[in-house]
Image (cartoon, rainbow, N blue to C red; front, top):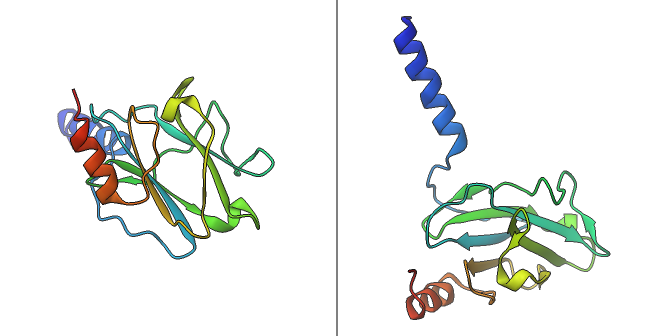
Length: 145
């Protein structure tokens, strides 16, 4: 393989590893989903900090090293998390952040993963939406600038 072909192949691999392929999103059984949409479409450095009561981060998650998105769909990026990781309460505690920049007004957020399997969050909006339709309607009322 020539050096040029090798360089092109390595560049393609690097680009593929740092971007998310748009894919169909199916929430696996026993998981909860957190969906996040940014107006600018730039998800670099944005992650999910998730913890179970009483403030114990899920395995492998640290503030400086939040969970990277599971994938990217039409709405934006998403995270799939095993509900069992949150303990018997089923409380899914989370913050979507990039360093110290936090979404939803910087508040600690939570939802009951036993009754709500999936949520949607629009960048710059403090509210948590419990359906894709509601999140899209809210974005339509306050469009991206």
